[in-house]
Length: 177
Image (cartoon, helix red, strand yellow):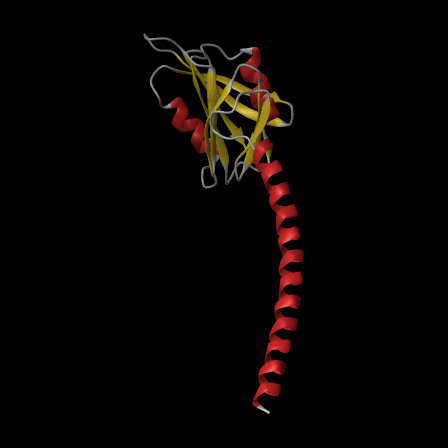
C-alpha cells in the first residue's frame, strides 16, 4: 500500500512538473519575445550621448535633434542638446511657472532685450537677447496652454542671435506630450 502511495505521488509530481515545465516554456517564449521587443526598443531609444538626427523625449515633451548635434541631458522635465564648442539648447519644463511672470523675470535681468513673441510651428515663444560684454546670449520661454500654469524655459549656449536657423528648427520641433 505504501508503494502505491509513493507511485501515485511520483505520478502526480511528474504530471505537475511536466505541466509547469510546458507552462514555463511557453511563458519563457513569451518573455523572450517581449525581451526581444524590449531590446529592439532599447536599441532605438535615444540616450545621453546619442547623435542626431533623432527625436529625444522626456516625460513632458520631445524635440528633434539635428545632424551634428549630440544629446547632452535627458531628465524627467529637461532635454539639452548641441554641438561641442558650438551652439546648443537646454529645454526645462516648469509646471508651476506663469508665462507673463517669467517674461518679467527675464526682463529684470540687466542687459536683457525683449525680442517679442515668435511663433515657430505650433509653438509661441517669448524671445530674448542678453547683451553682455562677454557676448550676447539668446533665450526663450514657451507658452503652454493659457500661460497661467506651465512654461518651457529655453536657454542657449553659444547662440548669439535670435535667427540661428538650426536653433529655430529645434525649437519648432518641440511637441508636448
